[in-house]
Length: 365
Ligand code: ADP
Image (cartoon, rainbow, N blue to C red; front, side):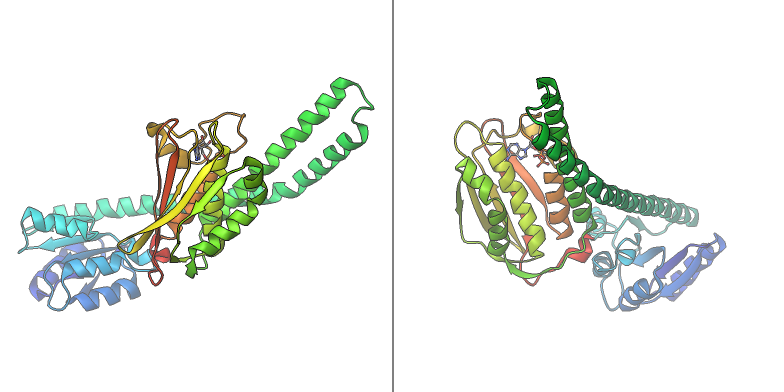
């Protein structure tokens, strides 16, 4: 099928000439002569690529590009945009154009064959990106189905091995007792791994129900679920006043649960001390969960958010999925998550969420 190019230029002669050689090169061409029309056609016709004049009579080309790139519909926001201009030629203009989200910035006169080759290159990149998105989605579905389907048989294996342990412990020889213990232990670990995988594939799917919600509600839910662990560890948890944010309460509660759970799990020799706070930053709130635990070497600060990445062995139970879940949830909200830490100096995990009234979920999607 022919790829469609939306050719936006208020200069009729230039637009016509460009449409002609694009059509000759095998593209279907749609035209717009103003910024407003370009935005409308980008949404209605979903072209494969947009050639955008910078100087337009109604809306500035940079602004048109920003609107398209921020569209809630990803099939619109992912459309490659090439700026074409005969007037804004300085380096600073190129920078502004690319910063507005464009994929390329060409200055006239442009040799038609160069323009066609550039269009083809960007279409190849777009196709590769779409394939990646498709494969990721397939992988996520696979992880979901596998973890979902394994839950039931595993539950069965676990309850029968527990029954065996209960009934026959001490009635057989010591070796048999050991075997039963190993089995129960293995099944328990496998079950928590499968549960984590399921939670990860659900977090990766997004599907958020965002509304203005007091962050304290999400934290309360997390603290309630962690009640037993907090009690056992003797953790001291302090909380500053938290704001209202635009978010899905149960998902943010999971972020707090994973971060606070980790702050307890990766405690040092002292009892865990955890401080939770938030501060304003433009249109966002930055939340912090600070602990006095064993810390993380700076070189691993990014890697710990990867799936299955663990820095510690069996002595601390875990599957390396908790922080990956946090990252999926925060990014689906249009936020960021990172850690500031060094070895033996505690860790501060920070994540941003949009203020109430600002919804970035679809754009992040
Ligand atoms: P898990 O805890 O199941 O291993 P996570 O994804 O939650 O998986 O964390 C990944 C790794 O990051 C952990 O294995 C641990 O090495 C490190 N980590 C996470 N949180 C902390 C923390 N608060 N202090 C020190 N290390 C941490």
